[in-house]
Image (cartoon, rainbow, N blue to C red; front, top):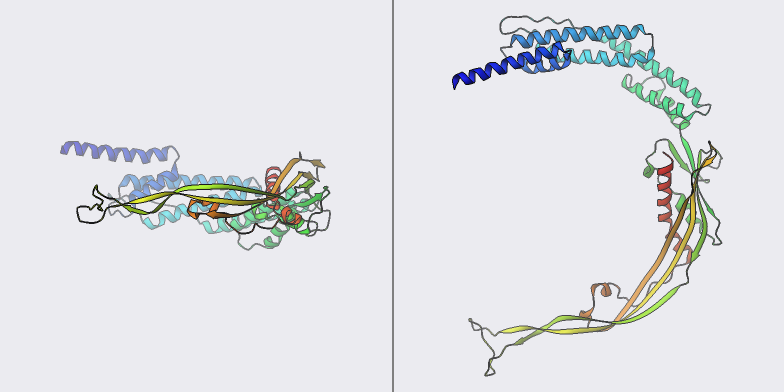
Length: 391
């Protein structure tokens, strides 16, 4: 048994040693460094294989990164400064992870040597150049945006936003971002056209056009009404065209019906053959529950009135001078009111009937009020079309 355990231990040690060596040989330097550090941290007796692996992997990856930095600088392309910054940050993080282990000596006396890079000058250089390149790029894009290129404005916004990775308060980035944001907006006019023969209340127009932009979740869309922005500087127009409004007559219907239910109605005593009340084993009178069929006559008055709105939604792309396919709109706003009274035993009534019990029905709403009930459905249809078409 002892021999078996010893053999297993030897295999585990050999495997781990081979594993970290293979990482270095395969160029998986950071993986080898992370693995070796984990094996060395907090150990008084530090195994030589991990010390050596850490030393080799660090030297190779540092040389590789420095060569890459030199190569990228030689390209004379400002676009590479962001990549250089990332490489320098990796070097810095790697060195910081090793520093707590220094000086590093194995249990058999091997002293590892690490040549650290002075990252501060490289970080400052790459930060300044990366931020400067993005800033100049954004300025160029904003000039294009001022000529009407909204895509350029959005790219400028992205470049300016990236600067915060290198510099938190760089020049006039905040003001330029706001400018790029405004130049990159697609302005959308929401309008309602009434082609029906019914006069709509002013509140109807206002409520339909009161779109919550948070519901749309679009960064580059701004929604207006003619009242908000009385100009013609729009990219899209979303028209809700109301072509027909039909309001039904006020209908009233009376109904009379009966409801019955088996209900408990007290109790009766049980008697023996001699006419005496039966007793249980404790001497108590025996009785049983009595049921009857309760009846009630219900008199119901039902009122209804419906406003039907028909039309379509058309989204116009003013820049391309094209229309998206119109989508039909069909909305019904219905008023319903029940008033019920009964005669007889209330216990016979169903829950639904009890909920409708009232002396008088609600009055019929005016036409304008009924039309306002349709606003919610119309707004939902507008939102759906905007989300589907304006992406």
